[in-house]
Length: 272
Length: 256
Image 1: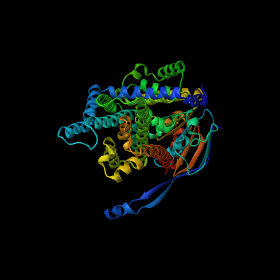
Image 2: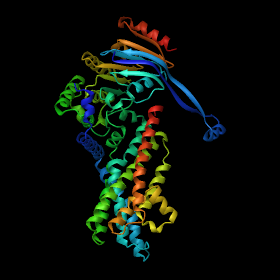
Image 3: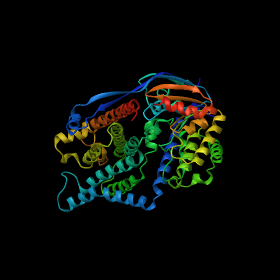
């Protein structure tokens, strides 16, 4: 019989990665039990996400434009925005629905009796294959639009990668906040609708918004980093307030981690 | 002692809601808090290898006790020491040593075979492949589930699913297993098989804490019974199984 320390000691990076991949395999196997639904969901998700780029093409096709931005530059912003969500939503954003469902049906307790951090267990059991459509769409739109703009230099490329990773961190922060709300604010879905509407500000050049809204989405709730800021950097025309937005994003991530811990503490104090 | 519980208390905070429309509207703005004592400073201890029955009516405090002992819930006051751990403080280290079967909360995954869920547990507990296979084969043999573990969970009967829940809970060879109404809704044959399994595991030194409404579980399994009612322990003794029928009458008396 192995000691607790041996099991607990299985918390190194390799074993956690193995556990995460096992969670992905299990989620995919669950979803693929219904083959038709598996493919249809991905295709529908992909088509749904193509709405904004199609509107952009229609806007530019009719002679209008976003001031100072070509059609392919705007499509690049939208490609990056979609790619960020295409990685975040399947890989870790599923914690939101996973937490809500588990708190509602009482199985959230099952995550607490596993020798791993609750958040990690929520991620492992929350992989959402349906959102892989976003990822495929993001890859396609990103590579297509990137091929239509002047090739970025290595320095811009490296800066872009760093900002893109920060955009994933911001999405992780949002996931923590929404999942945390799901622990104590059961059944209130309006807040999720507001979130999905609000993050859409990230897929347009901020110049089209009022100064107040620009400040809000760049400095206070860093939505602009989900698409616009990394795209602007990749295009070699970094947006004003990029550094402030990075700082704000990191602060946002720490705040969201604290919020999740606080909500989890409320759950373990109140018993669901 | 394997488990020592002293003066354990838990009070839930709730809010009073009116029953008329006017009171419901008022409660949108002003709510009066209600404090509900679920456990009132209970104390007990459990030895290694015991098979303890935890009895009580709905709302008596059984599930609250179980949640605190499994590290899910923090108590309002009191202390719990299990294998040297305080469950809610040392949760991650502590829960590596325990297993749990909840009759009404499945750890299996509905659309895929139980064996896939077992592999997820293998990864969670970092169980070496050889040890995992050996334990799984033993459990499958004991519970007689054979090829069933390769069928999608949704195609299994309640009894077959419950047997797989037991395998899921035992794969990492826990020292203590918490059972919350494990035989609820099962037919007589499935109940017997599961009871045999519990007794066999108990012979191997696994400690079981069983909460149930089914006095048959107590009759067949428990060597000692703790009865809780209104958050207090009203009975805590080893009992003589030969005089079980009289005991049932006694338990019923205690719970009224």
